[in-house]
Image (cartoon, rainbow, N blue to C red; front, side):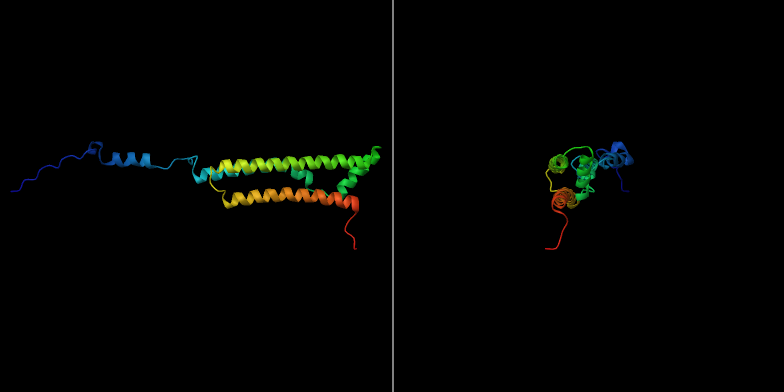
Length: 162
């Protein structure tokens, strides 16, 4: 007759067979919100920075440059004439205010670039964020070009054959 001895209890076996697995499942479970340094969290912060900047730009500057052309400057001159003011002076004041708005827009873009770098936590910007930054800089450049073209066409007329 062979005698079998009862197996010795293992360490930690006092928790019962299912308790250990459940405890590990609770500890090993992914957090409900992304960790602050995770790529998902960084992407969310980058998107937030871009959305905030776009709301600012759309509200303040894009509307001012959206339909800017020589006709707008002509309207400013016409209104000044009707009010008995100097049309050239009115256009000068109007254009200077637009130049200041372009400078404010440029400063906001620089601040946005810094905020994106800070939100990236030292990582390189994802392609989509770099593309959004380039697109924003392109909109600023387009607004500047629209102002230059409007002033040129107002003062020198439209394109004519040589």
